[in-house]
Length: 292
Image 1: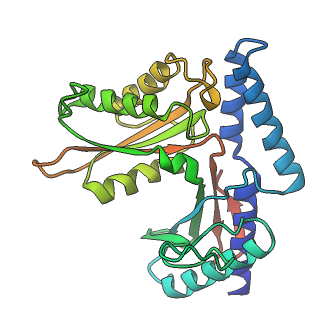
Image 2: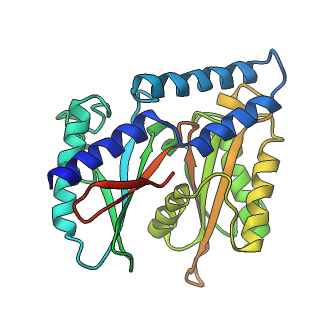
């Protein structure tokens, strides 16, 4: 498993230090929309310089290197126990090398053992597929943006939000309004309509595996995604809450079946440091290609 360990360490390094091209381009496009000489323009320029320097120096984009979330798709014969063991070793090694901050603490004692390994860290989600290759995607999700996630139960009388897409729209926009830039905006939303309280959040985070410039195959959700971004960017919250034209870079929405008694809308918020990367591996665990 030496090859797999090495591949996972490199995946962690690149995810931590190099923002995907689609995210960086979205930030550059937003910079063009901001008025010259404004705090919003200045904030986006600083973000851009941060992105460039982190890549050049191969150093973490943010001091909060975030929750470590792996999504692994593999064939039936993939040894999940062995993979998870190797992933935990790779996380420990990446932390020693400085690719990850010593960032995971025991929730009962507050003790940080410096490895980023413990109950729930890293989080690894396994899925089977028919292809012979293994695909490993990694999200590093910061704590600041995690704090402004939200979950609503419809109907919501305060927001006059009913159990329909318009009601979903109202609560999603309310979540953006409540965040007010505290999640290190401009942000990206991952949303799940339906599910239960646990799976709703799980599916909402899986939306971050999509590219910013992709299109939702479900027309109603595609229109809702575009509307959420357009409307949010008219709220005047702007980068880091300083005002401006760029509150969101994107919104990705899915729907999951629910029970008739419940109608949840789960909203995960991603900061501008949208650290998401992935690789395909050959049977020996070596990197064949990069996914983003």
